[in-house]
Image (cartoon, rainbow, N blue to C red; front, side, top):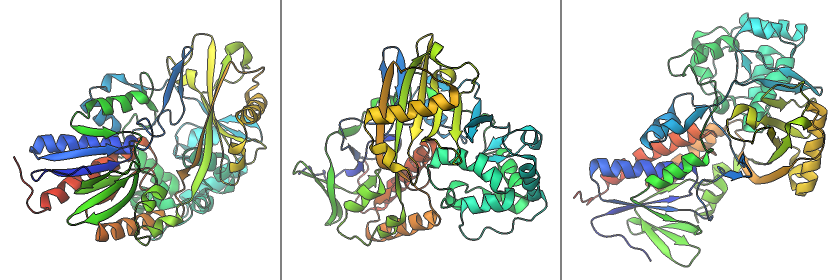
Length: 476
């Protein structure tokens, strides 16, 4: 058993993805700043840190197996990158040209579309993505009051009511499902677009509410662009790990149980050892978090959060294999297509250095609610399906030079109606039983990298305050 000395407090962080790493960093920095004797232990079950973030560099290609970029609406990641001294490696994507596949034809996304909602009417009315009757239906949004958003409701039903079914099916659903990977009629309006309840009070409709939000001071002017790092997102992970000089890092070790032990917490490990801690941050999936406690009722509300299975497929081609009529950088696929892929990105068109000269790197996504079985196919089977779809949409010919398939089984949390209330109740019940344990990660309050970073910062601040309030905290 690893014990703690009398003059120190120990914080254990379970999970070495971006949330856990960020929490460890901010705890370390706060302890240094306040000169508090805190020992931090970060425990990761796998052989590597970074979670779903993983960059592969080989044969001149830079391939992201998991997420490949992020939008930084509030500058959260940019602030952390500066602290880590990698702000100069933070890069914006090249000019983006997004398309939506409707009835197996690609249509450009109109300028001004935010979160699948148009905010500029002239480009929207000029677009061929929605029929004239669909555009006319969308303008009713300006004439009908929104009413108060006092209870959570279906995001899909709300958009359908405000803008009509065609805008929902051809624009909002494919763009938002590309992020949340769920059934839009089951997605929570409060969880996916939380800012609407605030801006709806001063706006006449959904379009005006979205426009008001994107013009607000809290929304950065360049937030519409995607960001990454030179060398890929793993550059960010490596920078965090490098700065954790005062943190004990443990890989290939899994926490199996948490229980109270006098005034501390006892973490049992799968290597037959244990660790005592005064506080714990759990930065794992909610299913793993639930398994750590004997008291099943503590996190039972989280049972209502479904998980989806997806896969990413990176394919490398010679540029002569690509039809020249498609000049976009990304496309998403609406449900009114007989296609298996849900989205694709021409990585080399968005990011410098992701493919050798004369080559094309495409990252495709498969797996959506109701169609998870496709992810269970063999790598060759998945490759065949993706190639067929790419041929039909963008005219790709021949076989790829390289293929990397990455599966994420039961890994994508779905923010269904009532999500925020379930999370709130779970955290409250956990706090009542274990005041010095916090839950963070993409299951709870945002799936993006910036929102995971924000949760980590807030949890580190809360844990630090909890530790200060404990009796006999000795400050050297």
